[in-house]
Length: 271
Ligand SMILES: C[S@@+](CC[C@H](N)C(=O)[O-])C[C@H]1O[C@@H](n2cnc3c(N)ncnc32)[C@H](O)[C@@H]1O
Image 1: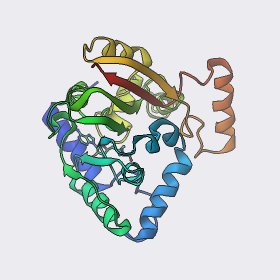
Image 2: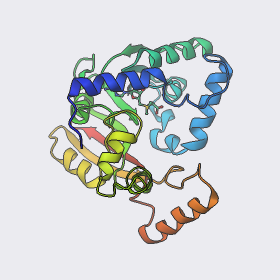
Image 3: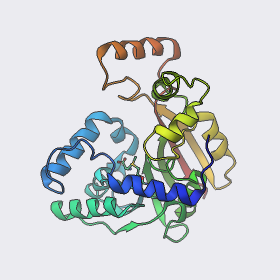
Image 4: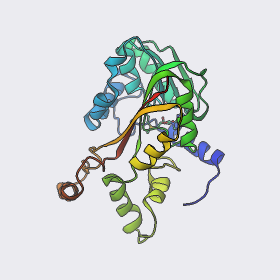
């Protein structure tokens, strides 16, 4: 894998997501209209309905929540609608502008909404009841620093729910076929393919075991659970039926439990 320095990666990351806020690439309605945001929301939950089951927004009524990497704010407004005290950050001004416009349109309020870096959260220690982050910290050059920051800002006994990408997933394997095998570079690893071709430069994928080891070494973490969600992307939902059949056949051998693209992490900060 090429070595890039962290500040170069951070600026590439920021440029990438600032050019196109996550989940907006295929949206056809006029930017920042109600129809625009509703199209984003429909598409997101059509493709990733698992989010509701994982996040369980309505259980956090009255709690102080931080969402790290709000993107276009689709999950963020679910926390607000659920009656939580909501704080959100994202690295890009474009994302924060999306969420501000969205809140105005729906007459909703956030407690704070900031352009900020997950690796240096602008909050005091032991502050949040719950931290949520969906598809974010694997993009950040120092993912483990972002994890440490999440732990730091949680109250003792507070909980976190984080989704990152699973390197040992069907989608990652198909991605390797496309970007390594079919490009006649079969020696390139899945990690290399994700780093160079999955969204922003420097994207990482982790395995269940790797993240279990990471969490087991954190003295401030207890009761953790790392698992995967088998997604629309693993099923090759966007591809012709024949590819979907191949994907389904592979799962006859592998099962679905451990090979999903979304690696979900839940834990509690020690009391
Ligand atoms: C794949 S999008 C996910 C956004 C949103 N959570 C969602 O699910 O739609 C990744 C987002 O993470 C943000 N991000 C990446 N690294 C970050 C960091 N170090 N600090 C804050 N935000 C970051 C990007 O700006 C982008 O908005």
